[in-house]
Length: 129
Image: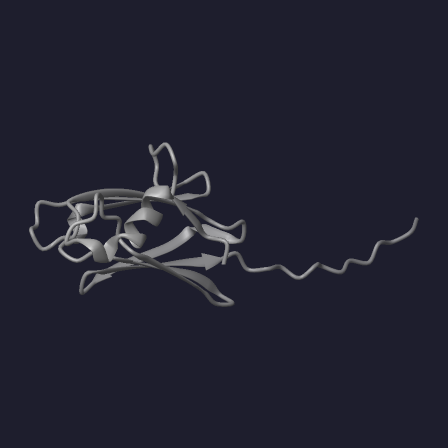
C-alpha cells in the first residue's frame, strides 16, 4: 500500500515519530505523542486506522485536498494520550477521494478509502469510408 504519512510543520518529517517509537518504553511520557496508525489494502479499498482514545468525534477534523488526507484533533480529555495532533497521509493515485468514510468506535478512528474502479478498455469498431 502506498499511503504515506508525514507530520506537517516539522523540520525533520517523521524523525520525531521514529524517536517516539524508539524511546516509548523509557518513560511514561515521550516528548510528543502521535497516535499510532495502521494501514491495510484490499482489492476494493484502502483502510486506515488510528488509535484515538479520549477523543470524541466532535474533536476530530478530517479533510481531503490535493491527494492528501489531513487529520487534526484537539481535546481537553484527560483520557487522551495526547491533547492535540496533526497528521497528513498522501493518498495513492488509485484512491477515490470522493468516497472516503470514517467511523470512530471505542477510541479507534477507522477510515475506508475506496479505490477507483478500473475500467476495461472499450473495444470499438471503426468504419472505413
